[in-house]
Image (cartoon, rainbow, N blue to C red; front, top):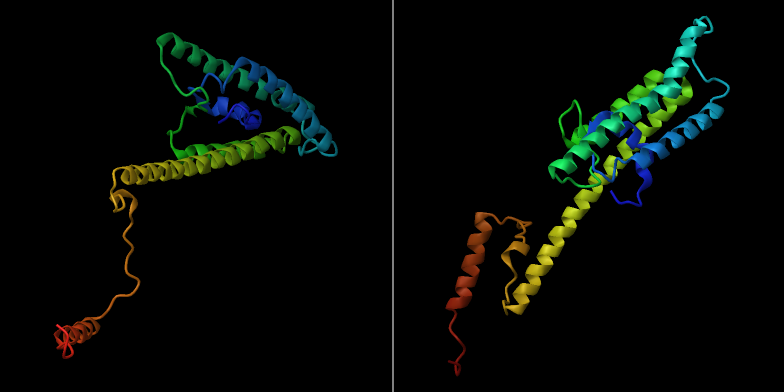
Length: 230
């Protein structure tokens, strides 16, 4: 992930909860501070957007439950982000003291799940979207925002997977180009074996066709040359 890629704005708040062992340039104190303001601004916009129906709770629901839900929604999510974000920052500090180096933009490894591509690309985003869907009836703006961040997680990691695949193909192309140039410098006329792909024949001849072909050319080779020619 490049420094100019700002998709972390919509993924880091959930990433710090789902993951740990992040890079020192992906999870930072300035980003946590900035994300707190971004989160409240987004929630305010979502609240205005859902002003006609901020909650899907029944009117008979006790008022104190609505107050608790609002407190959890407006303060719980930022608090979770800061708690787990601080834990990631502590891990980064410990690694620095121990002299352990990781990629500075590492987006972390799952806390409770296996570190596999499917988990990063599907399971974690699906869990985030599900969490947003569960919270949506209680406080629609918060639930919608969490689900939106989960969708951003899916899009971001799908994009990273495509970039990695493209990078591997580019590396293979550059390797083959180097082999071609090296072969030309060494005066090798044949192509390097590693860059030549043997294609399967498109048409397989039957035994009868091969025998007829052999007999036809056998007669041609055995034919006597015309008089006056050696």
